Picture 1 (cartoon, rainbow, N blue to C red):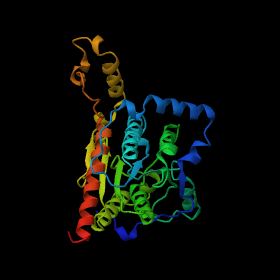
Picture 2: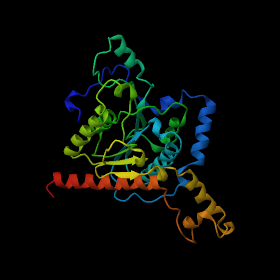
Picture 3: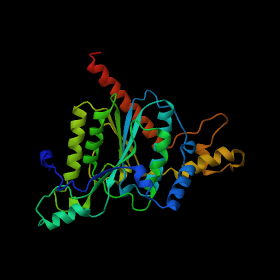
Picture 4: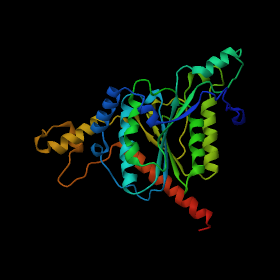
Length: 315
């Protein structure tokens, strides 16, 4: 049974925050910052291949920063996002990168307030949201591209309330100089244990579905990329989205394989397991699956945006 969309609420928004990734970076110890920079140098976009982003329009990215992406998926997402950012920047296409998680586990201060209020039934969302701006639409990419690394610090990835994050991303369109496409990258399943333990079980999923419905009805050029799709057990279906299975998210070995075949092409044994991705003379480095999905999502969302623009003009 679906939750009544008009009944969705947060018990309190007093502890929610919107923060720029730069403000997170400056709070990290110098050693941690150096470690992140080393990672970004190692897994930079030059290692994962590149391809032109055809017909791209201004684009807003919304990235899931939940604990389910810890490890290989978040490594791969950062590498792919940096690559797509480089492509868009080189083409002169404005873009914005946002992320969403919570600042605490187990409901944080919001849950404590609910407990102190006598634990009323069906309190709504019980968590302290943290929405992160990695790059604003008008910010220089060169000033922001390394900030994606802040999500690699211990404890950065927590819970995800997708519906409210999508509402936030949509609200930022009010300041756009020209219409922008929206690409949402997530594991497809909102999760906040504190909220789900005291509310109807589908409260977060139904709210996300409702926000998606309203966005689509409003003509938003929205494309979704869902990671680790075989982990999903909720029956959520994507609407014209792109599914990336867990096997396609782990690209760290793939990146090293590409390096091997580029630098040691003549030394590769005949029976190498890398034969299937071995390059011949003049071949370009292929994109990793997630990077390719991001590029595809930008193209498809941009095409929708162009179609909406023509329709509004009666063309």
